[in-house]
Amino acid sequence: MICSDLAPPYIGGGESYVINLGSRLVKLGHEVHWVTSKLPNTKYHEIYQGIYIHRVPILFSKHYLFPGRQFFPLTGLLPAMKLAKRVDVLQFNTFVAGTFGWLVSKFSEKPCLLWCHEMFGELWKKIGRNLLEKEIYPYVEKFIACSSYDWFACPSNYSKRTLIKAGAPKEKITVIPHGIDFEMFHPNIRSNLKRKFGLEGYKLFGFTGRLAVVGTGQSKNLLMLLEATKYIVKQIPNARLVLGGSGFNELKPYIEKLGIKKYVVYTGRRPFKEVPRFLSMCDCIVCPAIADGYCFLLAESSACGKPVVATNVGSHPERIINNKTGILTSLTPEDLAEGIMKVLNNPALAKKFGANGAKYTQKFTWESSVEKHLEVYNNILEMV
Image: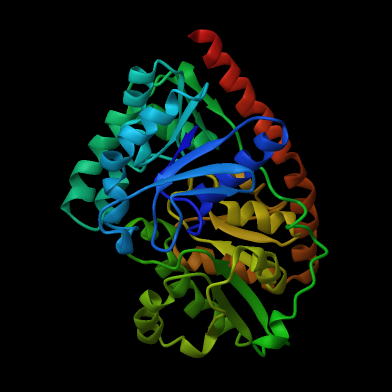
């Protein structure tokens, strides 16, 4: 049983992880149940890619990102306990579900795993939307990390360090990198988006994902990318920043203030299956984040043969080999701009980075990830 506060139709990095893991476990003959929040216009029970989804009501469901999902531990506790009796292993994904998973395990007497994308720690003081998030969430993370889980797993060495800092025992943490769907993400993707948006002849650097500049979205540091764009277009007038994803309205006032409206192109909220076409359109993919537990964007862009530029923080050094598959920069808009311009102005270097990246990412398979998950599951079963 996997328990997390969000599931389809909402699909972010965490949900994509569960879908890829769960569907492949099903193909191997395992039965996978997913307990999650009931979002508007969804069914209480559904089979999604072979995974049994069980949705429980939450308060403020129309505002499920905040504050709705925060009520999931209250409404999901009893349903999770009931379902736990039917399964062998329990997995709870941070942040929200991690607060009560150990309790479900205790009452059901089933082994449990905490999956942690990353712990923000003191960063909550910067990215928190309110006093609760800024002051209380760091303590909630410590509570989760110190709870009586049988084991912990995370997708990067950076994530492991944040877990240890929060108080998790380092000898009980396994790093399991996410996989890449190479049927979707590969160098031979054809895209008509340049022509569709009238961008033929322009040098494009892009970002797709949550475009928020409030709450945890601040961790993506997109305002710095906008500041870098101002530097870039002064040196390369035919350069354009292309953005895809939700939350663009939050960026508009800053784009206007910086005077770069004509240099920023919003392509809309792209369905996940169209993300490869977006990546293929760009000459360079950028992630300016100040914290990142894995960064699917960088991994999938490299798989598509695209050069990548990112800040040298979080798990980015694990996704990028500096000056071989892309460029790592400091946390300044000037340095980020220099890295992007180095790629845009040197097609031969960009091609080299892209080819190296496509080769480097081949080791990140979902088959390998699933195998390591099964090893952990079997180990904690033997501990009971």
